[in-house]
Image (cartoon, rainbow, N blue to C red; front, top):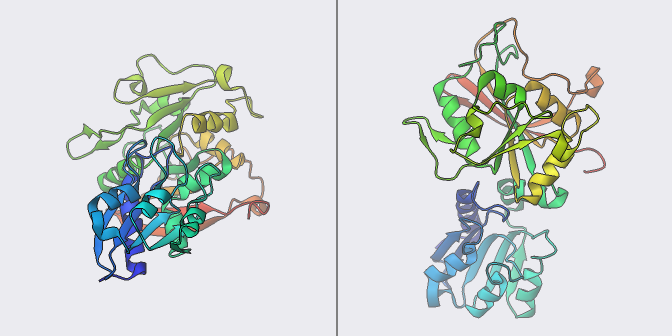
Length: 353
């Protein structure tokens, strides 16, 4: 027998298995408990267009779901899209109680809790809400702001250098840290880099298993922010390993800095079903995103090295004095090999809080 709180913890862990493959849908996990509190079914949403977490769990449970409890990380949907409404499926299965972590904020899908209650099903919301929200933060942020959730990833020495004075930058961080970056890449829908980084370093911007160099089956969209279309024809980002979009000013217009309009870029990505973006490569591009208020999270890999000179990790972020410093809420510090990885979220503007 498991408690509903324990079941929700398991559902949140299950939901995380869908990171990077469900967009434009959210990640969702579900457990079904029978009348004795035993787990009789579990599932997660694995890919857009595939069965939702509740449907997978119901298929496992069969008749054992009748009279039981569904524990789900996001309010069961109440509409028919590529799949039917999960709220009605739970009603049809005879589920007596539904425990929900987070309400669905989308107008098209919300209302599942109302339908359940109208059919006599007991509904409780808010169980492990903060933890479930964190696990689904990219999708929740994207649907509320109509733009993808943006994580800026960078690697630096202890004194803040991303390259030596002669321009060399491979490898600032260790092999374990670089492997961790590929895990991070596998959780997002798109990887964004500036054309300067593409010209200087010729990155491939793919998700790979560094043990054998093999490519992951699911690859994020590669996006090169290239105001004037300078991406070389033979650049590795143009290969067949993953889809690529060269985003130019002719296509998206220009922002205040005369370069690609970043707000328009994110709006276009959202329109393509992109809900999470990893911003990589280019201290100037990172500065432009930060100055525009378009970064939600920062993941930094810090190597125990000193260079004393060379390219900084960040430039031109619109910060002229210490009072204008961008403040972060530190969420995690983890040692990866000899390096440190820190994860922090940007504090919301007063009007957003």
